[in-house]
Amino acid sequence: MVSDETWEPRDVHWTDEEMAHGSSGLSSTVMGWWEALRRGVSEVVWWAMDPDFRLVVAQQWLHDNPAALQDPAAGGHGRDELAAALAVERPDHALWPHLERFVLRALREATDLGDREVGAPIRSRIVAPGVEVVDLIPLDQLPVDESGTHI
Amino acid sequence: MESLGVFVRLREGTWRIAGLGWIAVPGWPPRYEPLPREVLD
Image (cartoon, rainbow over all chains, first blue to last red; front, side, top):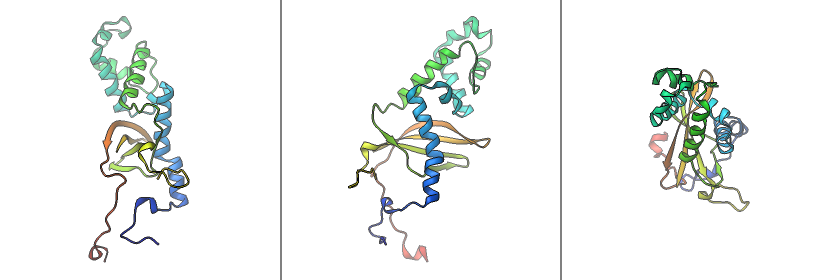
């Protein structure tokens, strides 16, 4: 029994249900996406992103590369049409290979942790209805118990 | 301490990656102050 005065999160003993959630729930989803990004599996990275997130990344690429609109492969489409065509789950647009390189490079740079190992807590945090955040924490920031487990 | 916050959004029954952001976590690990007894009662 832990008293109120000394209680800390690490004193919690997770139930089987909580452990199952941690291994098969949001944390697992996020870690899978993170691994796909590290390994450069762009199809998985792109597909797993929310449609709005894909669209803003496509718009950013077009903003940074306005010449793409003049490319014959753009088919004379306007900025919004082209961004929408590129933002689909599985794009087959002729300009996708260019955006694909940008996606991997931009997301890797934005999330660069070098070779540090990361972990995700069992529980995510609710931000809004239907929106949660999973914290990827560099494990070297966490204390280690006597068994070598990050706590 | 800092963490990489990965925002996820439930979209038609599937959780999708919706955004990224570095989140500073001062005073990690957090210590939760116990609620005053009168609140618990």
